[in-house]
Length: 367
Ligand code: NAD
Image 1 (cartoon, rainbow, N blue to C red):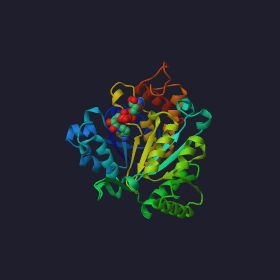
Image 2 (cartoon, rainbow, N blue to C red; image 1 turned 90 degrees about the vertical axis):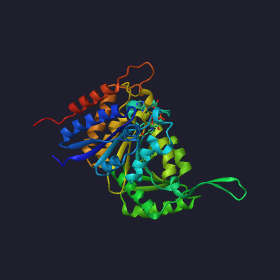
Image 3 (cartoon, rainbow, N blue to C red; image 1 turned 45 degrees about the vertical axis):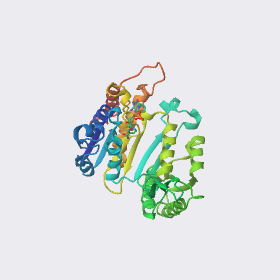
Image 4 (cartoon, rainbow, N blue to C red; image 1 turned 135 degrees about the vertical axis):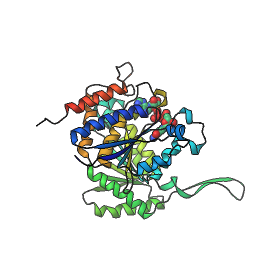
């Protein structure tokens, strides 16, 4: 048995507790199979934290997250808290959590599962086999650069300003995450920028190119962001790992994610330099279906698999979970978000039970 991993669970709001329960059961099952130990500790974030403490990110939650080996988040938010002033909203808590944990790298896979190919809005022959990882810089660039604001000019006309800025060290650290990620995948990295127009992008390109000498096993290419957007929908199979800045990554990761056509399937990981990572589904708290056993738990379960692979370096355990997801889809099980109109559907709990059965049937023979 390994040392116990301390995992902070943040179920949050809406469907969060329902999908988190499935992920925890799956993790416990895999732990038993792989000889791992998890110490789970729940903490409050988002609307649940506002109701209990008045704040969307209590200091105790942030401290507990920082002391963990990894943090698994479900989702936050809901109608009930939508009218609160911005500093007290659930979303503010999530941003503060990412900032407080110094998570500068966001990894979002977009994988087309053969079983769900019809869910994509693109032609099956275009998306079949797509397996992309977008590595987005998360704490710099135009969302944070100074000066920013809406200022009055001398004529009295207002002028809105944001600043896209990156330092060499900011580029290098996200570049290293991207090269390492590509190395664990198919060894191809495409860096996306706008170096033909933007100085900040020229520096980005220079630094990423310089880093490439440290990773001779990774094949590096560059694309301008407008071309990258076009190529993602024209011929997505050409991509393995993509690295880009905050703004371009925000947009391109949504494009890549939507190639898969199903928001209930998409996990993500946010990583810092050394501390614990944060692993969460891309979707929100789905208040419209909360408490009705209708949620698709697979994005949460795949986020747990990302936690094992990228946060705890347990790729074999991650692979077991990913295989169990493929097995239940092969069995034809679909939650409502994945099923064509009129087709039979299963609920969140039944999907969870099917995953546990799939894991059990994948267990190594007893000796
Ligand atoms: P959403 O992702 O919660 O829901 C969009 C649609 O997708 C809804 O119809 C919902 O029922 C469906 N959906 C989402 N996840 C699903 C799942 N696992 N299974 C089945 N169906 C699913 O986005 P929204 O409606 O724009 O936002 C709802 C709340 O979530 C808001 O308060 C928003 O701020 C919050 N939100 C939180 C996060 C986060 O926690 N990271 C991300 C996005 C939105």
